[in-house]
Structure formats: C-alpha cells, structure tokens
Image 1 (tube, rainbow, N blue to C red):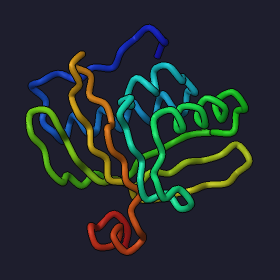
Image 2 (cartoon, rainbow, N blue to C red):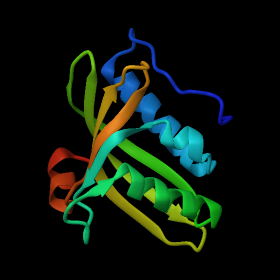
Image 3 (spheres, one colour):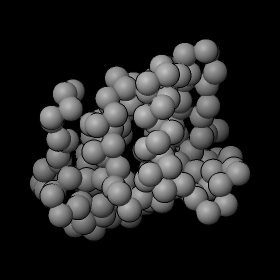
Image 4 (cartoon, rainbow, N blue to C red):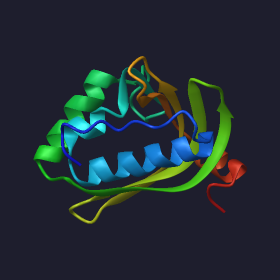
Length: 146
C-alpha cells in the first residue's frame, strides 16, 4: 500500500466488516512497515490504556514515535489479529475485542487481547480512538482464548 493511499470503509458495510477490514489494514500496514498508511488508521486523539508501566496511557505522539523507530530499526516482523468479538456500534463508532500478536525479527512474540474503539472521523476514515489491553482473565471470559 502506498503512502498516498487512504484506507476508507464504505458506510453500507456491517460493523463486523468495518472492524475486520480495519484489522486487516492495520496488520498489513504494520507488517509492511508503512508508517504513513499505518498511522492513517490511528486517530490523533487516540489513548491506549492497560499497558503495564504506563499508568497514564499512551498518546498518539508516544505511539507514533515508538512505532516509527521500530519500523526504521526493522524490529517488527509482522502483526496478526485472531478472533473478533463485537461489543457495540452505532453510525460513527464500532467497538470490538480481538487477540493481537506482534512478532519481532529476533523471534520474540507477544500476544494480548485488545479492546478497540473505531470512530468514523470527519474525513470519513475509520480510525482507532481508544485501545485497551485486556487482562488474561478477561480474554478467557469473552472467549478469545481457551
């Protein structure tokens, strides 16, 4: 995916399709290390919570700075998502849970459940505005892991 392309989702799609297309685009742009396309999927107002050691959460600027360096340093091998559990939706927002796996080029792998809230922003692009790392027990409870 080129840096000039924008990822937009059409209004007539179901919330499940919007969520899955966003996950597919997020995984592809991260795996391809396409920083511009990847961060076009993330709202400037995003807040990531539930990350150990970051009590105040992670802002867009913090996330972007870390990701840009990881992409440049070729630390990331690939990102995958497994499972999709819908939580809630309306015309402008879609909330769901999924398992995210991040594979590093050194062979390390980190998997965790995340709850993601997408919002259709003024330019009609669906972007994550909130992401919360879930506990192991919560992942089991919602059926993302056995």
